[in-house]
Length: 122
Image (cartoon, rainbow, N blue to C red; front, side, top):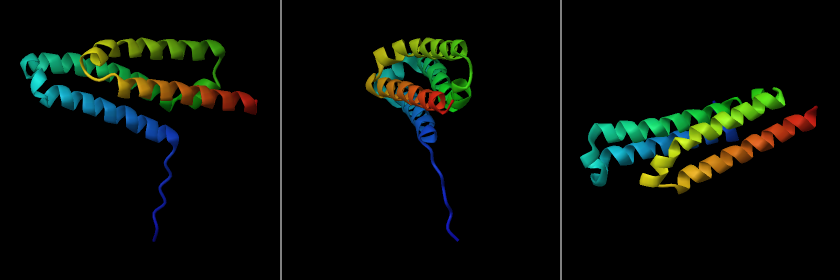
């Protein structure tokens, strides 16, 4: 019996958010350069990364529902997404910026593409 696994781009994008978050927390927790910060450094950078990760996952997860909502609801969702990404500024300053920036851009392109497809169907 063959098992068929269906993976969508949305699932891969959510997995990307979780992998980058896990990598960030792992670097802060185990890298010798961050050992002097202790648990408070891990919680502060990990917490800021968690806020952004949740924002990215929620926007990606509910892109179809938001696409069918009003223009005002979509703008509010994008403002909340950008606000959650502002929390990443200290994380990107201390650690690595490229994976987070690429993930943000890919998420915004995905959301715009899905919303354009939903608008074309109407």
